[in-house]
Image (cartoon, rainbow, N blue to C red):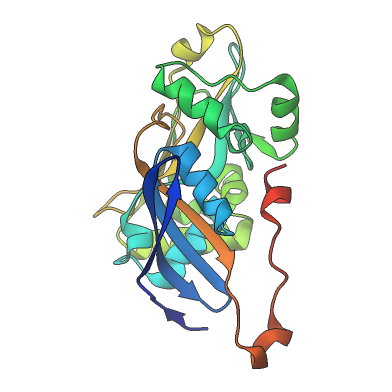
Amino acid sequence: MEWGHIGKVYKVQVSGRDMGIQVDTKFGEIESAIIYAPFDRALDTLIDNNYSPISLSQNAHLRICLGKETSVSGSDNWVREGVLYFPKGKPKLVRNSSILRSAKDATISHYNNREFHPASDQIEKALENSIDLPKKEIKIPTNRFNSNAFTVYAFGGEKEAKAYGDFLRKSGIKEMFFYILDKSYVDRKAKPFERQVLFGKIGYIWSDLSGCYRTLDHDFRLRGVKWAPKAPSQKKQLIKKPNNQSQLQ
């Protein structure tokens, strides 16, 4: 398969602001774009333009295919995963954060310097696809991604985890950090709260993930992905486009 860069910028109006969606990647049937805005507005704009927030596994795959010296690899961005923190308990990495369903409330909470506390039914739903995390930051050697439960889950399977680990190692990165909040801070809270996962850029000798940032109200990058339309002669090869709404349930 071949990648093509299309460098096309679309402009839409959201809440009175001029929001630019930059389509920076097109590969086969996959098209990816970024928007730089507060999280709630960025998410609304992506969905209005038929994008879904990208997952860690999708984002890692794009990096492998495009290489290190691209915007996909050289920039941080929010992904669809989140970290649920439980006072006196273990944090959880969840595939679909509750923030995706309550982006405005979460963004306002961060603007007011408060945590976002999902409702009990949102927590239950998020935990259906999740994995335990330790109570402190994780450091995983890139040559062990396919044997580490966290990286296997995060990147979509043993084969996929190994591929991303190999890619990082060839880029000069020997280990990846996943930063989580200090246990003493979490244990002081009265009820569970959630933070969105940030997929760190690939630096000179480092790369990381973070579930620490309380900055959804800031202008920042959210990456989206969708199935791009094919020419009429290629329509038989199309994969059915995902339903954005169903992916956020």
